[in-house]
Image (cartoon, rainbow, N blue to C red; front, top):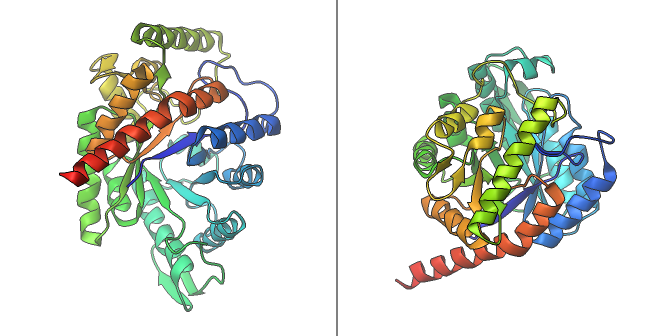
Length: 366
């Protein structure tokens, strides 16, 4: 399997080091980001979803309109749209974009954030609902005749969709969540299971757990890792850049002008993924070859917040280590969204592709 690279397109130019300004939906920024990611050689881009932000499906339509090759990964939260309708929405957009659509299923988050959308189920109940939701979505995508479904959360009678996904492999389902309930649902439904940037040991542990959960269903999911690479011409230059990023993030947080964060609650984070990143950060600021955890510690591991730091060759080498563990998709985004995406396309993505391709050829020749 060739390595896939996923970028990130926000609704406006902001990060932990860039204060949000301008309109909530900055069309000029979105167009520029889409063009840069396509030019830089990314395979897909993530369009995020939160309870107070613009809706990912519509932003994805806008990105697709302004690109020709770039694929989409639309973050989607089950429970707020009927699964039959969601399946038809995704399949319709897949046709209109010549098969460029994937969906990233996100169930968890904090109870407080989900309450903003009127969802009062417990986390385990939400994952049980997600499993039923995806049962129905897949039947809408594949059923040749009307189907019935009876579950705890959904009851469908005569469900059917005239529109199926564009390609024979359908719309890929990416899946996030690290709790035991999430791993169980991922084993049944995930085409690609997504992790944040954890240590080698943590990643190996999670891959083994998801594979074990998938085995009873006869499934072999792929795996994605999310990171914030920090590159320099020398290793010292890269670490100095990381320290400047950390100092700027601290400055903005102290001034109250930093990026407005989502899923933030007082005390320990409510989601298992953030707790796992904080457990890694508790081991030290620099782990394995070049995993940097200090920003995760600063932000309470609010989302994708760990980095690989070094020269492009050094960071590519560390990414190949993850590839050997079973990672074949990397979601990478920087702290200066447009400039970093260009830099990754020029200096990092080609190196990782070359190294993983050479490794695959060497393995095949043995």
